[in-house]
Length: 429
Image (cartoon, rainbow, N blue to C red; front, side, top):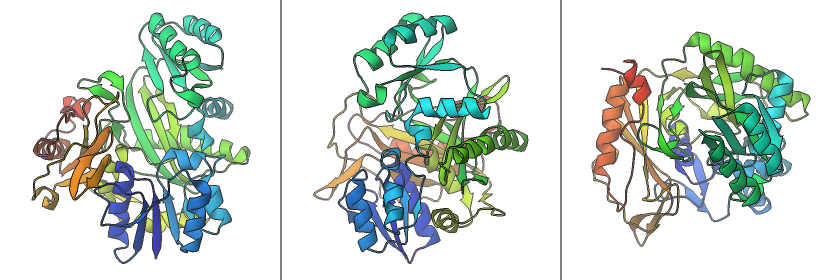
């Protein structure tokens, strides 16, 4: 079996790690693999967003399954082109991927479907956006509608900060085309929750819920990032809550996309806020989240590959099950100095020889590359260090022990991933 993984970050390394366990005899290919993926798969020197070249290559190589990791190639229509070439692909079509590629589309879809989310309006003019922000009152959230690498949402505690965010996006074009329009929405109070659902467009198979930590600083301070860590499971997400998420959020959203003529087949990620009135959608993503995937996949029991193939080949998930192993996983992201702003590259990474042999640690590479045999940094988020344990406290200790042991100049990471869960006592030994 020939399997292509599109993308080369921490999420894709985790997918490669998991699928190799399901199919150790398969031939794996990865687009421009990072330093940790090199040697585990054959490299494909084609950019993930080069839709025509990549789909043509996959057809010529007779790929049996393509798993598309990042949002950009999904939004560019890679899955559409792969299917035209007869290559089964796990991921939504370009039209279905609009649920992430356009926050404006997603919010309007939720409004029509009656899916709970924050009150909002969409603007292309800064004056209108500023006026609506005043109508809502601070705090308020300003979001670039398009893809902004997880950094396009700005929580504004004051109206002055809202004005600044609107100006940066609409007038100074900080996010380029992604900021052609903005969503201004009411601020929601509560804890965030990430819910992944494998879906055939109708049935939703929920994976273990997780919580991401977006802010760069401890105590959830500083600017938003692509994610500084995650943990799973989350004690607040009991069976009753997840049934509510399925019935009130996932099922009506999938139905609305089918009604749009854009059925969603792949991994639908619901980013939720657990408010006093129940779960509300912060955003939808059209793919596995990063770094949540690095915490969720190690807790997934049973083969994942057959389920991905069913979805990619147009089958049904009716009656399918996905088990979760006992225990907890916690992922600490090691980032470059300066991230999420400008950062240096090419700094050598030193990793203890015995670290990768530890039973309670898995290290997923993100922004790494090999330079004359040396492992060096090449991105803002460099490594995702996942600790495993019977409790969250054990997983936290394992993750931090490994994170402390890995060294590179300017390394930064948070030591408080999972702090809310442990404050509740839910993750205690």
